[in-house]
Length: 199
Image 1: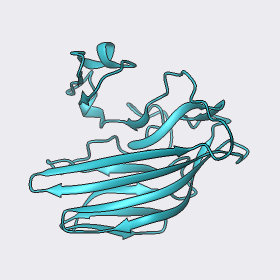
Image 2: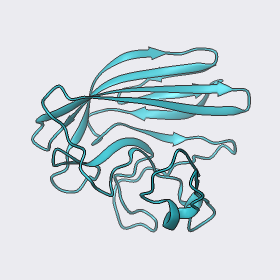
Image 3: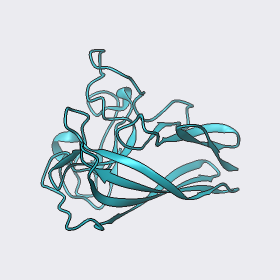
């Protein structure tokens, strides 16, 4: 059973009663994200949350797990949490459903500037599957340019769907990145087009 449990500023996704992940969407966050994402050993596959810089391995506070972000959307920084950054504001939930094999969250969000001027609308559908030994998250992201033309700028902060792995799984630690083009680890995969990427 894959169940959704709504709390004040997040929705917990539980598989057979155990936490799998949580979708944070409240006003306290710069943009919605998933964290933790519990793997087969019971530990999170994404980096833990922290509130301030300065601790070892705690750089880039905006890397909060799995998020949808881009560094230049009509000149708005919707990637970092540096001074002057934009926000992805939660508007509403279009669908919240639980089931025996999957649960679904569909949310409507507004991408806005630091002055809260709307740039675009995002419809984000996340499906959470429990298939015997496999757990899977499927994202479908739709951008609506309903406020005028939208340009996603050429920037290194352009992941759209971005994942910050847990510190022990970094490529310079115990992790390994491979892509469809045969690239291995960050020097051969970072910023490169590929049909798939395996971490």
